[in-house]
Image 1: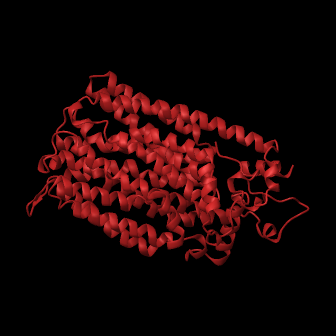
Image 2: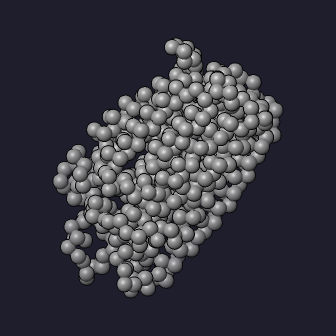
Image 3: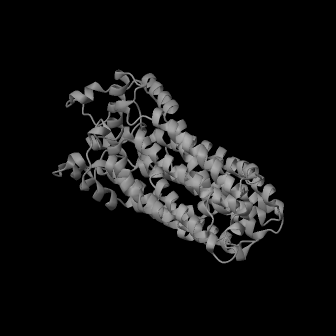
Length: 496
């Protein structure tokens, strides 16, 4: 059957024309002939003109949200009288309230406002907030700054995923997600090095920790200004492409979506049908809950690694520096797994493997009293946990189409997943120092649940793909709005 032929080609991702019967071609179908050399040239251009800016966005995003952990061991909690109770955890938590709420509407806005303007504006705003956080003199002021920081950073992750999907094929997405997300563990390494130096500055009545916010926030502002000049909005208005290249990328993006989207993302208009489709897709909720449980250890590890290492008996500057090697290991692993995930066109198995490796790390922290073993455990956690997040980003984006379905679904997934912050920011309490048994145990349990849910999601997607190959979903082509089937189209094969 036609749907089965299309499905096989789409899954293979080969250069053949898809969605076309030899006896009934449309003019637009004839216009698309795969040119592998041209596609390689296009990807090189996109990699040069887009990925470095996204890497910088995520690097500064993670530095500016996580540097409060570095500021903590540089004297922030003592200066703001937050040594007792859960005040520090509250300051961490409030960031995620606006961060969660703005994600879906932000993804709707990004195409209307233009990504090349909208994303740099968000960066500029949070950079200014981070800079002024150094002037904070009270717990209330710190909470207000963290709320504003969450508001400005809330649209970034979903916006970046939606933005990438405008330029790259579904099975070219993950390596790019890995390239930009590798900035997260690198930010931990870079942030630790910076904090060890900035935390020594005492000038103008501002001693140690304020300079972490002053300098890191100011650098973010400079980076945001550069983004305004160099980030394109969509392929159709990318000045670094020739007209032939623009026409070609618009055609191959439509073919890659199996007819699930207009050729030009600028032609697609917002409608509530796409919102409903995203909200009714089982893969939206599978990925939401998988990511929810994954982010419990990821966020707590990013925020509390300096405290965990200090709990091993190391002093402030040494503890800052000791955060660097595990994060560098995580950085390298993200790049390697993202590359092989795209090569194999698999997502779920890499998440399964990452959760097992991360779980080993937490077992080492819980079971041993030897500092060398505990520190080695932090490497296992970084290697296992960091690489799962970009794979989940690619997985969500791969299996939702067209643009506004993807934008809504990605926003919902990120919003629901980030509710894990209400857990992750409260499992490492000051009273549990130095062993943090509660935090390590909850993180370990969260990874076990992540493993189980990932296996269930792979099984569901495999079952649905089998239905499509057998022609059991072809009846959808008779629906009145068959042209709006998106990822429900019988020729659209899910990525496992």
